[in-house]
Length: 283
Length: 270
Image (cartoon, rainbow over all chains, first blue to last red; front, side, top):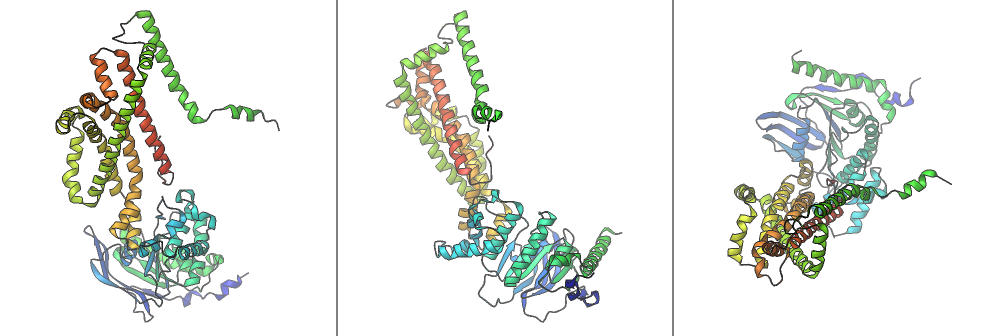
């Protein structure tokens, strides 16, 4: 018997896929990358990469290790300087801080409590953290609840938390500034599969409340399909192999992972990556 | 409920206390053997007084020795505080200025290898006999572990945390205050632990060579006096007391360190 949810998903011929260079996007862009090149210690990591990410879009970047996907994200975040090219930002509609970054590691300060870790971005941008302590506390409480942590966790130190909880704290810290763009660099790579799926579902739920422009780097194709509405498949040196529009609407349920369409999209993207891998190894 | 194991567990001492038994037992055996050898072989007191002779000699001069121990502790603590202050501030300079680190740090390492006994006379020439020279000698011997440890701590920050700070636009001052200094705290504590042992060495050397001008002499000067007057039991007593002071100071720093580090994930090695 067919799952009732499945019927609402489009069939494979409805999936749009563009190979090679990404076409101009007419929608209002959040991030525009033009002819980006990054050279680190005499190694070309990215070479004339261009792409546009629309406001409110969830984009996943998949690709083999060392293809430059993390470097692209770090360059967008301003943590790595581009050798050539420009990155321009669209104007966010509301006065929000431009971006937040969730690293692969939870990057929590071990000497600070969960509460103090989450409020760190506010403290750094504000300088005078004595100002409106109650507002800060309310904000932190709200985000703690949003990421699925309990109020009792606020005074715990990171060493008292499990890997999944640490990532939730890291996510709450990223969301505290209500960023216009959320950058995720393989945030759940270190977690086990069940926990990863749980966090994926929670992340979708959180995203649905704000529809923040999100760019996520992952090497897990299934994760990318489950979360993103658009997947950029990258080859070596930032070469864009494909720009896939994911044919599923939000909200997405866990059952989506078991559908035939999901498997087909997964298959298509994996084929592109396999083909690239064969070209790289000369087989 | 009668649980036969419950009473047995209640009688067991904490693991830390139980760990003290083997070394304590060994000490008693050594002291006992020492006392017996004295009894049987009749070794002259000047060569090797028996533990009981040392104890009675120490009790006889207890007020002088107690005052000497206090004088030595005071000098050691002053020198230690000065070493902490100087060590941390130079480490701060080294962490901020790479040029300063490159230019001065190698000499700091080099200076560390010069024997303190060779420097002590120089210090006495500059500062004269007495407390100033003693404190200076203690500071010189105990400052290096703090400088090297804190410099390492301040400069070895987690690149991920540094990225995080950069991402949220942290100023250099914010990075120093909120990232570098907290990262360096465990390093400071382990440096201070090494230094605390060295301060007593510095105090004894300092007092041995410069203690003659102090109003009331410290343990190092007693070592000097006892050796010239052939008062072996006082010499031994001074050695034991100064060792005890070293252990005490080391224990104190370890305790303070453990309390402070309770917040940090880094566990101090036992």
